[in-house]
Length: 204
Image (cartoon, rainbow, N blue to C red; front, side, top):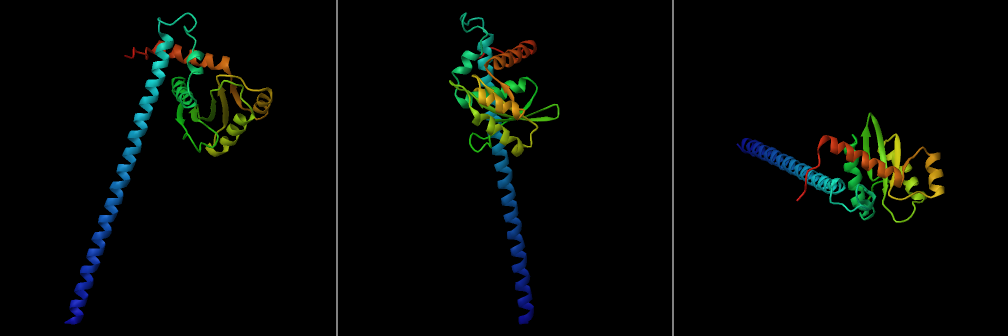
């Protein structure tokens, strides 16, 4: 009789343990799903905010109310951006130019501010909005980031210019460089695409 009771108790304990294990698994699964949904929502909201920022700048560039000095000149806006705003602006601009673009974390980015893909090729971009010339470190960082992001092409893009040594290092490492004049051309190209597609609407 004792043996029968003992077996019955063991069976109940086992069933209870299995039930608790199942409940724990379900709770962990629910927490994981909720966490994933939160991350996706935050990214969606961040992307929408970034696009609104870009559209606002581009609308100003297309506006007929600009002064003669400002009219059609994107660099005036870019010079007044923060570093983070410049990265966001470039992310949205390269999207217009047909790239799939991801912004890397603001810290711990392994030397790249943007990671992009187009035509089967992977790019890493070091973005430098600066009042002074860009030195060796920008080139060194983006070259290092190529291996981490498994990219074929490294790019340094700035609203200013690179020093002579930085240009030499970039050339020796096959780094594509967009300085102030090239940046203006890229922005104007994306502006033309937006005009043709009628993607810019008045922002209140």
